[in-house]
Amino acid sequence: MTLPAWLMRHTAVIEPFEGDGAYGAVYGDPVTARCLVDDERRMVRDAQGTEVVSDTTVFFPPGTVCPEGSRVTVNGRTTTVITSFSRDGGGLPTPDHVEVVCR
Image 1 (cartoon, rainbow, N blue to C red):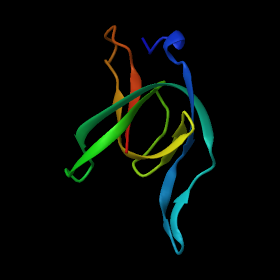
Image 2 (cartoon, helix red, strand yellow):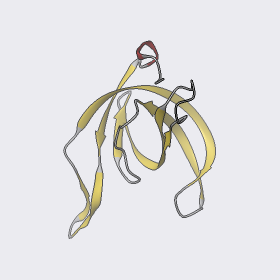
Image 3 (cartoon, rainbow, N blue to C red):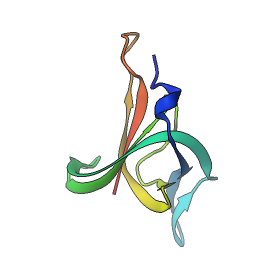
């Protein structure tokens, strides 16, 4: 079971982070995806375990690729991905999705 389509009320543009180049961060081609946006400020931990403030959490359909450091533009605002999680119930009747936590 995945998040129902009727919950995906927003559209986001994802520019996947591909690494650092000679002139800074390198991003892949932009991808547009349907999503659900939750604008809530909260403390989270990044991949290195450092506490940072997140202003936005975006929920995408399963299989969406959005690695740490990617740029996400949603609701006219461009943010950076702190971390992302694949939420998969392994066949249980849970709403499978990708949770992306942004600055």
